[in-house]
Image (cartoon, rainbow over all chains, first blue to last red; front, side, top):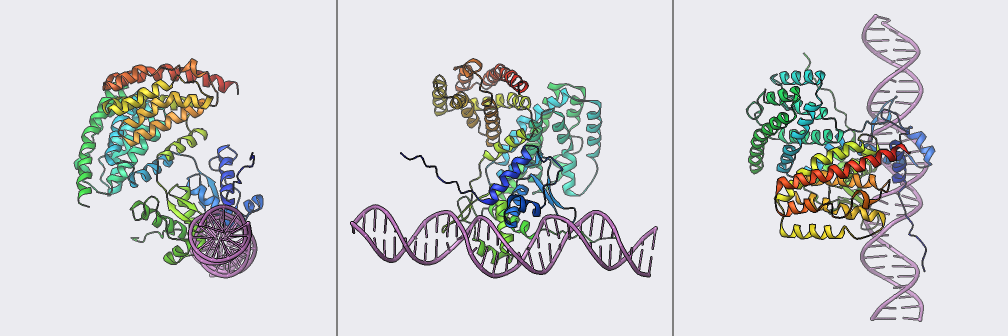
Length: 238
Length: 238
DNA sequence: ATATGTTAAATGTATGACATATAACATTTC
DNA sequence: GAAATGTTATATGTCATACATTTAACATAT
């Protein structure tokens, strides 16, 4: 009969990392707060600077803190945002775990729902923002900016759906499509001219859920199909 | 006229991190491969060991590599899985960035779509698995196991939708609901008796997309509503 | 008052020494 | 010969110290 348990040899740096992470999760440090300086952590945990630094580096890599250098520097707890999901989606895509087609199809399924919900919750302020964004689409700018302008309406709608999970997912997809698209620099005016969102915006502002869904679905069908063709072509020329 | 650009002072460790990450993304190192040892990287990048180690630590924190100690140790490229997304969702929930209600609502919107897609792609093998899982629901087991049994059908459907992004999202939601539910241990037989998925399975096996969507939506409506009430009650008693 | 210099406090990097983990090989012991 | 034990080589893990760099705030000079 053997009641011994295996020794769990966990690395000091991981232990420090875990404790700091728990402290953040428990709310002991919240967004904007500064973690103790390296010097203090060294004393608190009674470990070397190497260990403390590696732990903080890990926190940074996981997106839990940002590190600022200089006199008023330190590790500051970051507001947890959808960017975490977004960056993971990026990783998955670039590691070949998802195809461009799958991302587009997912958008095609999810974004109409989001648009519908946005219509349900549209306030006058929202309407104003949407109309502004729509006007700005016709501005002429440098390349990466154009994509940002033309997708602004999508981001706004994502924010309006009143469900932070769907917001996060939707934004990740929009961002991902954008960042992939920017790789093969298509003529934005050709595949996504200004004003393409008019009917969606009308429906949303009118509060017409079904119409918003339908308008979004149709928009995505034309736009994403075009994009997928360009992407496939681009991929073959590689 | 000022054509100067600000100097981008990027940290050596970040630079090393970026180069290694790109190497992994580009496929120069793929899953299972070992990155060069610290010693080699020091020479390659002409930096100190500190820098190399912090870079690798970051790769580890981002889940891109696992580090093994010992004679045959080193940093090995990890098979990237969708569990990353799940863990992100967990973080978001426990940091208070999403409510239980939002998660349920998201499921309510997404899972019918997934069920519909599953119906479209259902093969005889899938059908077999679904029926098996359905039979197993009536087994009586310990607590955490019961939840697993009763959600097996959902996981299977998630795998059948032929879109790895939706699969990942759906599984994350299912898993999250399960892990939250297990905190307040409700009487599973009461809120989710065996056989609750019959109509969904029928529709999916019949390949009837619309019917599958509808059946799933109805199932979730009754089940999740019950669950949300229990959760709200539980939360008040805290 | 503006520009410039100084200082202090934080993180960033370099280096060398030693600790530990682990697989592979060598040796003993029966 | 085989099983247990010891040895070694090669990784990563930790510690300690020195110095570099960044940055904000303060001090000084012109």
